[in-house]
Length: 263
Image 1: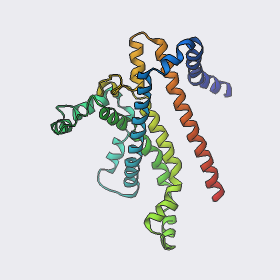
Image 2 (image 1 turned 135 degrees about the vertical axis):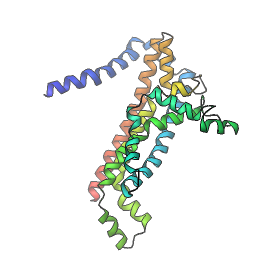
Image 3 (image 1 turned 90 degrees about the vertical axis):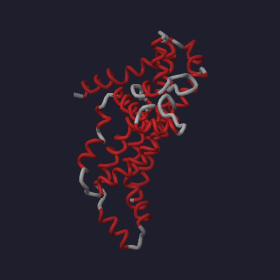
Image 4 (image 1 turned 60 degrees about the horizontal axis):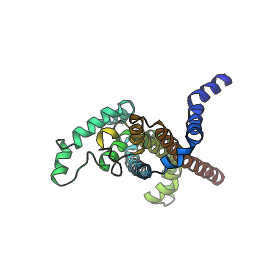
């Protein structure tokens, strides 16, 4: 069983990553710095990470509010809302892009109104941000909801009896319990945003130095038969994500140890 799991893990996860880095750093070593630090590549990195972080923070805030409503209140349509949240999981991203385009396009319900007031959504950075928010929204909710449901309400009542305000109860009783779920949801949401392609390629103009993100830039390199550039860009993006997630996991580890010691 151990050998089977190891073979599966190596074949479908470890080896592709190793080959990607090996090809970038060894096979294409003479082109690595030129391709990885090209001005258009730097701009694509910055746009991808900044928009992914923005979408992640927005999803975390509104996702927490949705979780609070779903777990603390009972209202007509609650089950339907809970089911609709999972739609981005199974919806093809190209269909998501078309749906968003139909709403925020120049002839869409919202897009036409905004365009009349000088605000364009489609073929701008705003369209990319909306696409990232749409495809990554469920991750925060599904990561926080199980943790929220396990919070003992008697702890909140005890805090109130001891004179704590609602805000103090949230910060000292509820929030420390939710931190692992929230951080996990943020990581998953950010990862989904960074790797998004299908919806973004429809909603943005994909022009360099304007609204070209790294996944779309990689595909453009492939379309131009620039396999060297695509491989190097992919390895750089993967390296940045690995370093970021490594620091986040180290932070979670030390935070978990502090909470265990405090308890």
